[in-house]
Image (cartoon, rainbow, N blue to C red; front, side, top):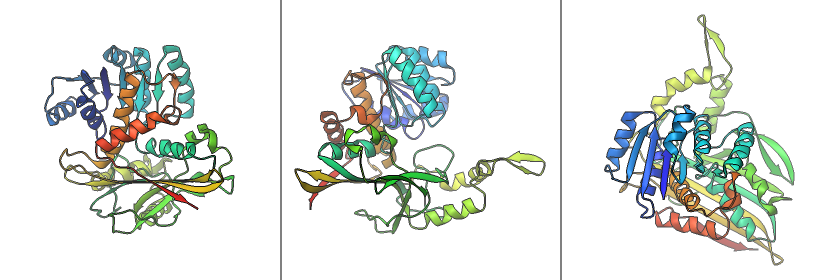
Length: 386
């Protein structure tokens, strides 16, 4: 099979590496607009004969489609809105996509229609979060007769936190993921809204001694596609950071520095968040020598055969010193790479815009977890009976 990967930033090279190491993959194409970045990645990977690179602007839809013709699947490792451009190019080339990010609701509808016409599947949000969090929750729900609660915790944090935020950008891009506002949760069977940067109970994970905190981040809308989710009494998703993070974010928000609304400054128009991001980015970007940790916990509570059962999935993943791959790249990109190869082999019979919970279930979920385990991404399951 032949796999194409679009984006040579923090995530794309890990997808590329994982596909190159699969004996069933005969060729991997890495696409990026930056020639020097492509050269550097190819060199880091040892310039294998199976690797091809092409300089291509994803906003050039026709040019991208030509580059992707003949490939069996595409892994997209770009942030919005570039991922949307990449998806359209793949659809024009008649190739299915596994995307680390997601697209807007409006774009999803149009993509769904055109992908069905082209007979291809576009699988969005297929990393660690979004991605693993939802499919693990779905697996827990599938094993129950009825579901009472689904609670998710996930976060990427630096191993050695430093001021000013005790956080580093582990996914890529020039911006901290800061979006003040309200997020949706389900409490007592009702949809409610909470301030995103309000705190939940402090989580604890094995091997992390420094105090952690977590804040509300809504919950995955794709869970509504899981049959047993209907009638759930509680559903939350919390993002994990080191203690003190929310206090800093709320202070920045109160100062107006996180606003996306333009203001006038010395005769020019500036966007506070853009200006703030330019200033802080050198202090919060993940440097090559820095190590990261990814934590994940999914709890699914319900009833099975008349007994109350709690399924708990836990993961504490760390930077791979031997392979020199960040934890976020491992957990995110390896997940996408494994699913991309499933797609390339024709393992899925759905077309259109296909959320992971619709296809990564049952045997495919077991296959994904086994493949991640073989790559030292360990997810443990604990069963607690009432």
